[in-house]
Image: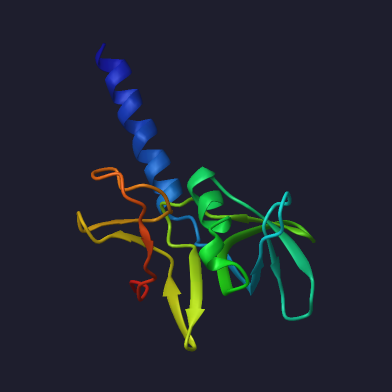
Length: 138
């Protein structure tokens, strides 16, 4: 039993060290395009269209109609010339530019004062959360 516990702790420590050292990835900026029946894409300044992929909460942000055609930036890594994988929602990786300022995507419930990273109903009162970009943490 003792050997098993030590092995689990060492494995957890090694995994933490590996994930803690992961770089945030590269930035990709353009306009978020949302076309009916198609996956969201980022249209870059040189008019390339790059498909965006991410976990389920990230996908909800990418399909939020309030962000359609916005000046958008994502962090992650390139899968191919026309595909980009966004970091998980637990990392600050989704940004919008408003008035020339970079803001991190977030959502806010003004009833319960709860902030979330993706759109949907507040887990407390079940009201729809409002898009509320904030200044990114350093």
